[in-house]
Length: 144
Image (cartoon, rainbow, N blue to C red):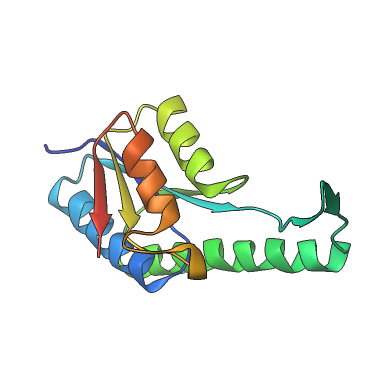
């Protein structure tokens, strides 16, 4: 058995969908392994000078609704592939959420897409995946 406890970081992007396929391959190759999926989302922040501008509640609700949609999507895709997995939606900075979840739950590996939905912040490797690779205490499989 290669990995017994696998954490998939999922945000609905093309790269995370590829990471989902790789994670399900790992689980199918070792049926006794366990897969957990974490979708991290954070509410937007707008800085004005030295302070934070208030964000309308409707905007925060849109972000939350999109995050819930993403978890529903991954649950559906996992069911279609016949893979049983725990799916968590957690609010916070994505890289921190992924790393904390991995550390608190003793995973063997983190599977993550190379580029998420971060947009302009991405350069060669997405900022979230780069941060996870740099700070993880366990192996990280970055899927392109």
